[in-house]
Length: 225
Length: 225
DNA sequence: AAGGCCCTGGGACAAATGTCACGGCCATCC
DNA sequence: GGATGGCCGTGACATTTGTCCCAGGGCCTT
Image (cartoon, rainbow over all chains, first blue to last red; front, side, top):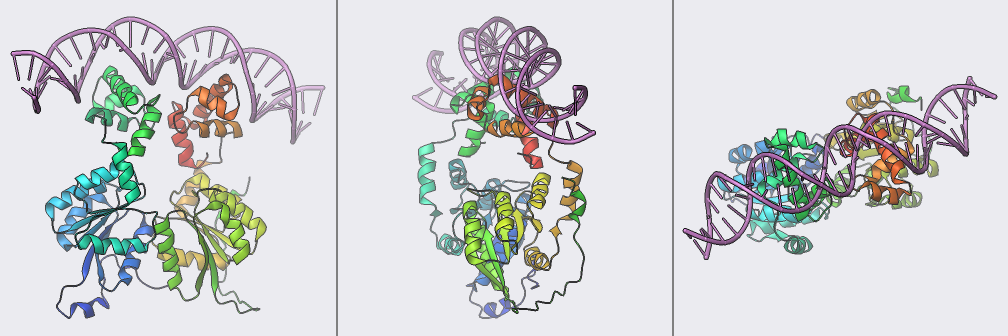
């Protein structure tokens, strides 16, 4: 029955640390769509004396606005979010608030995700499988200017190579995820059905699979999509 | 099968007198595959004075053995786990350790999951979207003999109706998830290709979809798989 | 005993899918 | 300037997929 509910108001003991005037409190933004995970992480990180969660949200579109408003030192971003993707938001955030470090925190260690995260200027990439303790450590290291990346994942990302799919191939494949027919896809992407089939075929070829379903799986698996 | 009516819990008196033993500490078992989530929840629940986590694990197969060993009062189980499914384990656990209440904690509020959880004898069903505070409350209510179910989910489960798919249809559909061809499926399930196509067709009909991919999605969505 | 449902197969057919070869239009790079 | 490669489309073709028939066997319940 403890009321640790505050999404914004983190009043209380924080005032004491701040009184010294020295700026040793680390301000965090937390974007994660699973409410329970978000709440648990927020409470957990709040236990560290020098961490302060200045914003927590479950929607990708709010990341940049809230960051500009609250000026966090580190932004913890999930990738799969309603609205804007965490990777998208990361790039925009680096642009809008360069002094804020981005730490990607995701369920899936897809090689392509890591690659895109790095390209978006993220300073770290963590998978949710690891122990919680990793998180606080990673935040401090990122703030110290280090890059934090799972070594095994880095290897996988390199061995997987860059995304071989062309823009259109990705569009078409993305539109095919939930079993849409060629006609559906064509309508969604505004292309001729014949063209759609060509892109699907080439995507299937590049992923070395046998049909669109396998191609979608492979592309997802590698974080190309 | 006709137990659909008993979904709503008894709003009985809460003050259960623990006459014998004065058991004031609540022992918990926590099964969750995501390491970070597991750790965060464990730490969090550990903050409550009267909770004690006696086991935490990330594998479905270990649930029953560890429960027999540690004798928890409540078992918090995720559904999607490596090894045995949480729903499976719930049924076995109710059998092996009836005094232990089962609380299912899952990412997806699939109607079929709820139904199966109830059939397996679970006392509660939470989705990970809700706030963390729900969790501690739910544990206490479950222990008091109440049933804890998201009302919206209960409605969805009822409106969705029971699983219309037959055993074989489920087998075949499950084997088709990652883009396997008819021949692949036939080999995996040890059936004639012709039979496989018949089952696929009827599954597509029952799910009111247009192809196997949509059928798989629909079946997944409803928790029939 | 009769009806119902599921399991298992087969055959035939229309539709969708995957492949290939071919055009033309644009960029960019050497 | 020419080569390359992405983009967009067409037409033809073989294969796969989805549908609709059919039939027999097993297992229930009425």
